Image (cartoon, rainbow, N blue to C red; front, side, top):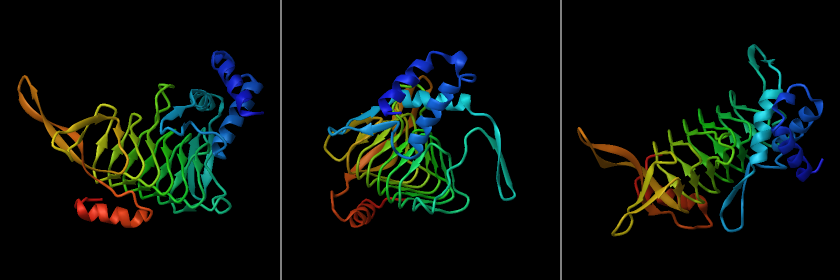
Length: 275
């Protein structure tokens, strides 16, 4: 079935919740959508030529329906046993994906050739571009969109955004470096080539200050291209006194270089960034 036809069928089935668990046709439609996600034929979110991102709400609906139509099953991996609804990805050798034990990726996530998964977790609906590294104990939440040649360092938490349906997932564009123990949630967008130092926390309401000019520029939920970012804090007055609130600070720009590794190393040295 063509993608447009699948979309129409999902939209029709979405309002028939009483049939999700008993209608074989709905079950088959949902499984087809998840299979397309698995193979990278469709995405939860995709970029436009102008740099904006579009969310396919109907694909999110299909994922939510998948949790409903699937039955609980025992999954055995040698001596290990799991009990869940969603099967795990497999055939990594055929897909040219390096997977280090105990990395786990759920079926319905797309992982491109050349990706390296250290012991980590990748949830359903997520998309990971070519030659990206997901380092140890990093988590990629449901529907997160990760570009090509991205480095997700150890212990990074990338949140999942299944609901609200119209909400953007966490999006990390190409050639981005995310330092250790960063947390990115609530649909934040990291534009191409940016570098986040260790422990940067970004939510939809986190204030982001560009302090590279005479006057600061404030952003929320968005890191511009090639930004170099570190964690910071700013004072805020409360009835009991002045306290410091976490924020993120853009302290410089990474060069838009064809040699991405050289550009990254130079940015880390120049700004003394902990990764």
